[in-house]
Amino acid sequence: MRAGIRAGLPFALPVFAIGVSFGVLTQSLQWTPVAPIVMSAVVYSGSAQFASISVLGDGGTVLAAVLAAALVNARFLPMGIAVATSLKGGPVRRAAEGQAVVDASWALANEGGRFDREILIGSSIPQYVGWLVGTILGVVAGSRIGDPKALGLDAMFPAFFLVLLVGEIRSRRALAVALGGAGLALLLVPVVPPGLPILAASAAAVVGAWRA
Amino acid sequence: MTAVWSMIGALAVVGAVIKAVGPVLIGGRELPTWAVRIIALLAPALLAALVVVDTFADGKSLVLDARAAGLGAAGIGVAVRAPMIVVVVGAAAVTALVRALT
Image (tube, rainbow over all chains, first blue to last red; front, top):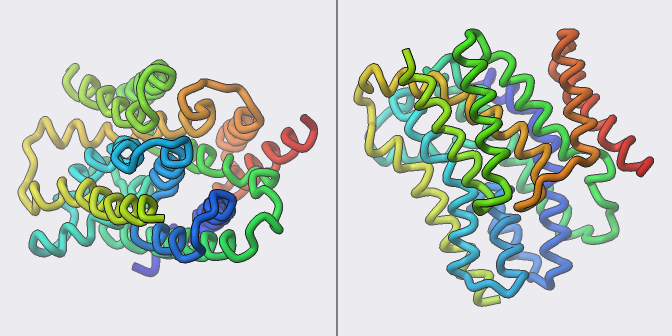
């Protein structure tokens, strides 16, 4: 578990910064201070939270907002299937352990298709703390803090994922799958709701596994 | 605020269910070989998609902005085998610099 926490620590900073911008944004939408903090505590998904409040802010219904967030989080379906055999215990415990799946923890725990359960759960902890503390700071300090984007912290995510991706490319097949997944996602960005392009990239893995 | 609270409640449930489906339905069962082969290739597919979407997408539009410069810097860092933290902080610094200049 310790090794997982250590592996997750570098992600706490960008997650914290994005949590701050989330907190700031909700206050500009006149939310009560408690709501965004509770939301970050029980939803714990930056992309889904931003997607849903933007739908609601644009005058959409609650159902539309929840649907948008569900699509954004749809990638956790294949990720959850992938980690399933590496978790422990009965259904309830497995369901609980599955909550530790976020992009970075899933990628860090991945060892060529098997998953290190302790890295998965451990690396999720500092990100959860960073997300919650960032949200609280954003709510409390509001617009008095500048835009965290000015520090370029949002660019840390693709950079992290690039480093992890390069580690995964150990064969020509993996390279082809990566290129296919990236290409498919980019093609779909303008035509389907946010979230689906990443889910659809799974198809590249299916095609890659199928072609001998 | 009623709408906000019902949205938060629904999201908490929906999110938890999405993450629980795989672990609960599959449990500890060994997966067939074809599924294992797909799972082994899931990381390159999803990570590559996350890289390009986090860099080039803004909602439903494709954009070329400061993040692309940051990713370029990260690419150079990876190519010269810089430590992960250097790659990531470098990407943030380049992105911040481009944002400050434009």
